[in-house]
Each structure stands twice: as C-alpha cells, then as structure tokens.
Length: 421
Image 1 (cartoon, helix red, strand yellow):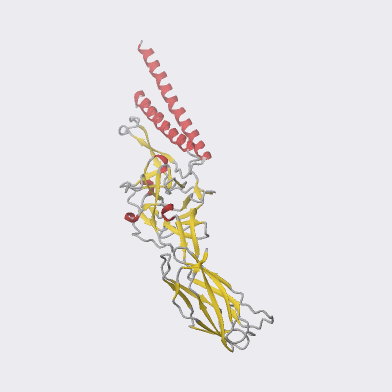
Image 2: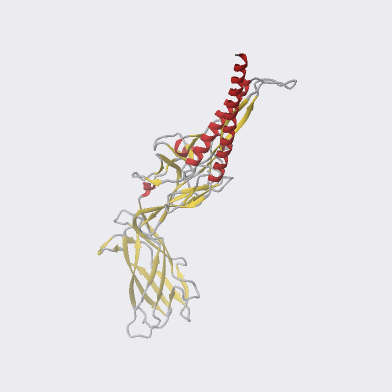
C-alpha cells in the first residue's frame, strides 16, 4: 500500500465528508420550511485493488444522497383555513399553470387564494375534482379529471324552499265558516324572497282547511310573482285538541309560473304528528278576539356571496357564504406512490414522478392506505436540529482525521525526499 494510495483515500474522505456536511447544512437551513424532507448521506467503500498476502492498495469512500421523502413531519395548527396537511402517506397534486396538464407533487400545504380565486402555493396550483353540492365528484375521479381548485367557481349561491314546518293553534271556540289569515315566507330557486298568505277556514266541528294564496314579492306585496297550483289542505283534530289527520296525508305546497324565471317549487309541509300537538293544534283561545299566530320555519335562503373556504378531513373544499350556507366545491385527492423516496426533488418542496418512484395513484383522503388531509394545519419540516448537529460533529471529526492522514503522508514524503538527498 503506497503513500499515494493513502493520500487518494484520504482525499476521497475529504470530498465525501464535505458533501455530507453540505447535506447537513441544507437540512438545518430548512428546519422552518413547511413540508421539508431531509436528505441523508449514504457512504460506500471503494477498493482500488485486491488485497492478498497482507498487502493491497488503499481505496476510499464515495457518498450519495438519500432523500427521506416518505418521512412524516409533525402537524401544527394554522389560523389560515386554506392551509392543510397530510398525516400519513401521499402528496398534494399541483400544476405549474391553470392550463398545464403536467402534475407535480408536494407535502407543503401552505395554500392561499390568489387574486383569481385559485388555491396556490409558491406559484403552483392545487389540483382537485369538481363536486356537486352534496360532495359527489361530478367528472372523472382520475388524473384526467383533475383541474385547478377555483373557489370562485361558485361565488354566489341561493337555496329554494323545499320544506316548511308550521306551528299554530286554531281556536276551537271559533264559529263555523270563520276565517283567519297568517303569512309564510319562502324563496324560489333564484333566491327571491316571497310571501304567501295562508287562509284558515273552520268548516265544521274539529275540521279546518288551509289554503295558500299566490305568492307576492316580499319587498313589494302588490306584485304577484307566482301561481299556487296545489289544492287546499283539509285538517282534522281529535277531541282532545291534538292533530288527527290531514288530507292529503303528506301535504305539499306547489308553486309554478314564477315571474322571476325560477323553477317550479314543491314545498313539503310539516303540520305536526297525528295524536300530538307538536305542530297544529285546536284549543279554545278564551278571548274575545280570536287569531291564528303562525310560526313557520323553512329551509330556503336568499342569495349569498362567498366569504370563506373550509377544508374537511376527507379533502372536501367547501365555500362559506354570507347567507349562512356552506357548499361543497372541490374534492382534493391524495397522490400515493409505490416508492415515494424515488421522487425527483425540485425547488419549493415540489417533486416529480420518476421511473423509480412509479406513477401516482389518486385516492380519497384516508382511504386505501392514503394519508388523511387535515384543514387548518401544516406539516412541519422533518429536520431535527439535535440530530443534524450530531451528524455535523461526526462529519467534522471524519474530515479532521482525513486531513491528518494527508498531513502525515506529506511528512513521510518529506522524510523520503530528505533520505534521497
């Protein structure tokens, strides 16, 4: 084994430990980077020749980087509703532009809404599947169905009245053919507020009818905006004042010919439970002036505008509106890989699929081995300061030892040259 071989081996050690220190430095620099995954040094020995009879040529060492992409960082609560994190395996799918079909992947969930309404992070657009109001994916739940998540795609929303519960006491001491009126508020499919007058008529002992007038505009009672097409409802009470039955058994208020251009309405009416006084009842009022005070609750709402975004644990992106409604807009998939550590790393915490990683498989959050998406949370860097400092000291010691080998070999060369002289 020659002095030259010793120097070559030591030089390879200097190069390897320098690379290892660079990896440690990069890890320490990214201890606060959201979703950052550490890189570790992997050393391999190199033999310059065979060793026999107690002699041989010194080799050296090489180093390669090992990406710990599949490592899990701690989750931290965020005050930003559009921030999200994945607990478990998988990545968010992103694209470099709204019209870019190339998918990239990241664990950095620090997304925010840009000026155009898209969820973006460091210039990359979050990809998801569009959904209907019930959260069902409307297109293909594949890579071809992915599109940039645009929270402004449904910036306004309204809901028609489809159900209405009615609570009132119809005075038992009213005379036959006596009539009373009250009103109910309802909304058409365009969110237009309207009012319909209900006429209660006592037709006999323990028997009443309820008829609805054509709805008028809530802001202008003189303007009729629709036509009631359903028949009056017959209501029968028991001798104890509780509701006995209604005809039809499942009463419905139907309205057509909305002048607003809205679709025809069908409102299921809940008048109470037979044998109970939970809805309509008939008891003596005991006063000279008889009235019907109606309490009606319905599920329609006027038009509302988008005020915020919420992200559920199943990856559903919902819009929050100022009329109190919340509607599903997109579903965010989790992209998993056979070998996530084989992904190619890019700047800004972005990864690209390679032949080593395999192609992405898109899954619903928390299903089939995919990690779970958590809204208003962020995944912290996997870099541990204590661990990185330990690696740094080990690299420093190894580097110093290799440098000492070079220094010693130089001294030995100097001694040899002196002997020649």
